[in-house]
Length: 346
Image 1 (tube, rainbow, N blue to C red):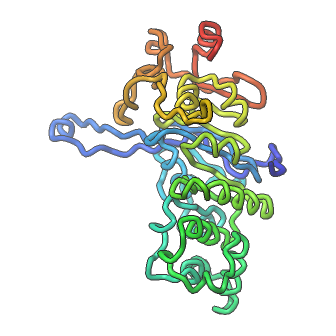
Image 2 (spheres, rainbow, N blue to C red; image 1 turned 135 degrees about the vertical axis):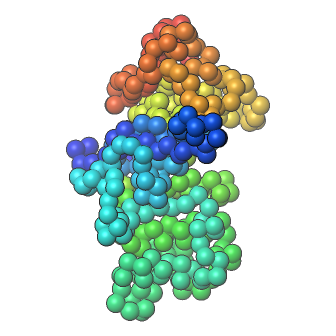
């Protein structure tokens, strides 16, 4: 784990929301109604400088939208973002380029994020040209070479002359990582960076990313649905459900001692080796499908799928994150104490 100063926050996200308006019917227009898809619906967290912060949840929970909001690829509907003690919620165009140089993103599919007609040297040189870094092409090519060597793509001279389709999945992800590092950012948003890679290569890529993070004192927002890689890779994790964070804390605390029923269900769904074999078919202790973000349930938004839900979970206001354990372990469940006493084995 890298050295982290908990008093030095690189980014603070405060009650951030992203609501997408739904196309209205004639009757809704006549009545003046507007419905929204609440992709991110009041998310608050802080990332310390030099920390790897994980955002976990199933598809549709809003974790990628949160990453895009931090990257300024989307404008928030509500809330505030503070980066290096400066409000960047709605920064002007002239400051946006500077911000994006400091905050870079590794996309889920490295092949889709590269121009297939560009050689790798051109893919990596492009951000240098955009941000006017390097006095001439020779200097830029040297920076490209150094970036490829940082991510262990060698021999760099040979890799530079290849096209993206000529690289393996792992090599493309390394090249995508090199492209983010070439601008010397202070923070990287990594959106499912190993989900498109073979299992045999995932640990190798994550190890490389961690080595680079330690060497350059980078900060990562690591977005994933994979609890096993999150435990290995992150310093803290936050579990998202239907646009909100429902549990947050140290990876070992959250995974070994989950307090929110949704976190318990995610952990229960992970395949476990049984007698040398993998138990693929497993009963998951939650029912039904995730509700639509356009029609979020009243009260606790998880009550429609929670096996421990009571009427109070529907009638009472939505629970906020409260401290449920040491090391800043937080959960948003009003019944976590009752659940623990009623089901001590969970």
